[in-house]
Length: 241
Image (tube, rainbow, N blue to C red; front, top):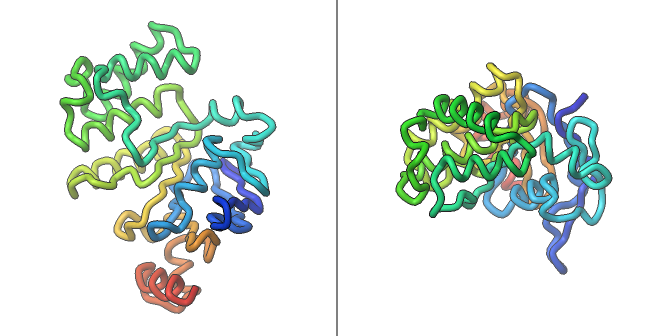
């Protein structure tokens, strides 16, 4: 079963076509990348997957559960890190995670156990009772990732999660996410415009001006475009379209 199956998704904002007949799938237990320039439609696509908006045409399924006809079942399988910070700045890390756990029906004891595990993994155990406002950008992102993992999702969606972070924080967040896929057999769908966040064996969905230009591993896309690297292929493919 595919972790994510997107079929013929089209969506417009008035006269502006944001997505046009977008189709692709993401294999379970993979780290996959949604790669595109700013304005390519990445955030629009993720907003449709997460039910923030309803698609005007097409279908989306998460582990076989249609997000339109079975939204609660589909959403329960997702962990989400949006591009804008969504933690409450005036609450502590503990309070943010506790609220998230309660929304997913977890008991207080279970929340306490899981948040200790996730925050330890992210190096945030000592920050549990710090207000989010006092944390650096990198630590806030780690806290968001810990929150997204609290209910044990099978699919993790991340929309430009390293934007605005320094190089060290960027590498740490990316490394944490890749490790999750290896160690927990989770699936990650990582949206970015940064080519240095993509590894040769990563599955890539190349999105440009609302359309999928190529899918495959980074190596396969480069080879099919007759380029020596994904960066060269990305430049030539987006320039030609």
